[in-house]
Every structure is written in C-alpha cells, then in structure tokens.
Length: 337
Ligand code: NAD
Ligand code: UDP
Image (cartoon, rainbow, N blue to C red):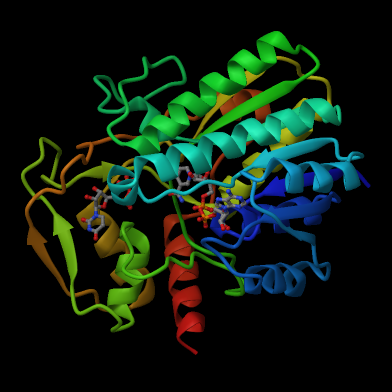
C-alpha cells in the first residue's frame, strides 16, 4: 500500500480527503496540531472507511518534531499539505501569526521532503490568488492579482516557494490546487466543517441560522454589478474536492514531473441569494436573513474554468448542488446532538 502524509488531515478538507485516499487504497498518515480541529474527525474517518489513519499530533512549524515524524514515515510517496490558518479577517489582525504558521510550516514540510526524498507534494492553494478578476471564468492562465489579505499572501507566496523549490530540485514534483468555495459534508453525516465560534463563511452561517444557533444570516451587499446584485461564487462539494486530490496524486505517481496548477471548481457561479434559496428548497429548512452593507474586501464575482483538471486529471465536480446542501444540513443536525 502506498503511504501518503497529509498535514492538516484532521481539518475539514483534510478529513474528507483522508476518506477518499483510504477508499482508493492508500495508507494515510495525518499530521495535525489540532489548532482548528479535533481527533473526532478521525473517528468519523474510521467509522466511514473502517480504518483509522495513523495520527501524529505535531505542529508543522516545529522542524525537529516534523523531522522525527518524516523519519518514521520516510516510505511515504507523497505529501498533501493542507495545514494552514485560514481566517481572512484574523490574518489582517495578526499577520505575523499567519506568515509564520503558513509559510514556516510549508518550508519545514518541503525541507523534510527533500531530506527524506519524498517526491510529490500537493498544495492547498485558493481562488483568492486571482484577486478581483477582470475576465470570467478564471483559467489557470488568468493573471494573479495582488492578494487582499495576509492569508491570501500566504497562498501566493506559498505557490512561489514551491515553484522555486521544484526548479532547484527536479526530483520534486508539485501540484498546486486552487480551490474555489468548498461546501457540504460527507453523505454519511459523520464528518463535516466545524468552524470555531461565529462562522466567517457563508455555508456554515446558513446551516447554523437554519438550526437556530444564529438568529439571522446577514447577506453582505445587494448592489453588486451582477445579475441579481449579490456576490457570485463557485461552490464546490467537498467530496468532489477530496477526489481531485486523489486524482492529482495518481497523476504524479504515474510519472508527471515539474509543477502543475489546477482550478478546482464546478465552472458555475451562484449568487448568495441563489444559494440561500437553493438551500431552503433542498432541505425545507428556513433561513431568516437580512441584507446589510457590503463586506470589505469581497470580490464581486468569481467562478472557475476547471476544464484543465477535466482534461488532465479526468476529474470533474459532479455532485448536484442539492445533494451538497442536504449533506451540509445533515452534518449540522448531527453536530447539534
Ligand atoms: P481547517 O482549518 O479545517 O483545516 C486545517 C487543519 O490544519 C486544521 O486541522 C488545523 O488544526 C491544522 N493546522 C493548522 N496549522 C497547523 C500547523 N502549523 N501544524 C499542524 N497542523 C496545523 O481548514 P480547511 O478548510 O480544511 O482548509 C485546508 C486547506 O485548504 C488550508 O490550507 C486552507 O487555507 C485551504 N483552503 C481552504 C478553503 C476553504 O474555504 N475551506 C478555500 C481555499 C483554500
Ligand atoms: N457572505 C454573506 N454572509 C455571511 C458570509 C458570507 O453574505 O455571513 C457572502 C460573502 O459576502 C461572499 C459569499 O457569501 O459573497 C462567500 O463568502 P465566504 O466567506 O464563504 O467565501 P469567500 O468567497 O469570501 O472566500
């Protein structure tokens, strides 16, 4: 069985990817410091797949601790690096925390990969690297814009660190995955997104409002230059996203070298209001909302051209939106128990 190390594997996208990897026959080692997750997600992975991933509770910014884990798992054939802090607003308040955590962590992971000759890395990048795009949908060739937050900067700089490292070390191959807006949960309802405190992201805010945990969803802005005046995003099912990581690893393991970059989205944009309405229709749950002022820093509209991933990885996001919304609601209801 081929072994894959996933940093941040106890988190939202990482835990779904752990399921997808195990179901594809990989042996999974999770490295996580549990700063934004708990081992309960690994219990969920175990219930779904029948196998509990090996868990190493280590902070990626601690090079000695990380080295010792890599030493024990030096037979790994690849690393998926999810571990990062991701709250945009917090990154504006505490930029050094974000640069240190996200960039030191990445540098340490790459250092260990080179030391132990682990040849493949998949990196969690983000649509945030495109800033406010002038042409839609965005392709991988769309010029990057200056990032609007320290969090976004860590993704732009992270991509560059990986590019430079691969250029200098051709034994290393890398896939940069630019996620659009991941939503939903595993259909079992056993794992899902677990935001700390008040959610920043739309989907958990919708489900928490429907569950009565929040009194009202605030919709930020109805005066954008979009068809209905609300911001437009490309919401991708987290299980489809997880499957893309498996496809990317398999592509590299078949011998692809150098750097590949893929947008991971559905290719279809939905406005905030369309998403709220679709949620209510799919689940029958009521979402009280009010329309408030725009949120600073929001991009009016962005969605992906993900056809490159379709052609090269033979991957596409095909979960119907209604299924994704139902899974998010199922997970929310399980969380309340
Ligand atoms: P998450 O917070 O649920 O998962 C990240 C995991 O990394 C957590 O379990 C956390 O405890 C761990 N972690 C953070 N810093 C660490 C460190 N120094 N050492 C070890 N573990 C550490 O977030 P997620 O939504 O699953 O995101 C995963 C990755 O995808 C992140 O890199 C994020 O920036 C990126 N991403 C997420 C989104 C999104 O909307 N969720 C969009 C684009 C990109
Ligand atoms: N949004 C909203 N209310 C919320 C959270 C988000 O109206 O409580 C909107 C936000 O303005 C954006 C969209 O939902 O247009 C997606 O926001 P999110 O933070 O989930 O992701 P982003 O695209 O900003 O990374």
